[in-house]
Length: 102
Image (tube, rainbow, N blue to C red; front, side, top):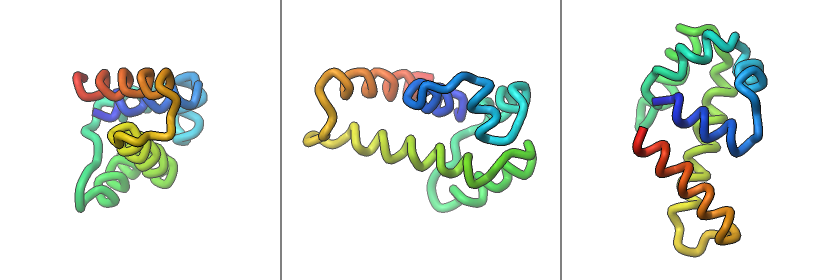
């Protein structure tokens, strides 16, 4: 679900719900509805991002950027030779685990 990705992103960027909603160009209420959507993945990623953005009236570019940033962060965490400090890596891994268990 997008809600877990959004929560992780907001934690990493230190954004309030209101600030994150503004970034996506929507209200907090709309953000909560978007959070219930499945996370776009695979070959239809762009199509699904555009469908979500069109349906809820949010910025497709910003949504895509957030999702790609989180994919890159997850990939970075998955590598054994991550350049992150052990403490930072542990915090991000915990956030990633939280996302997987949501």
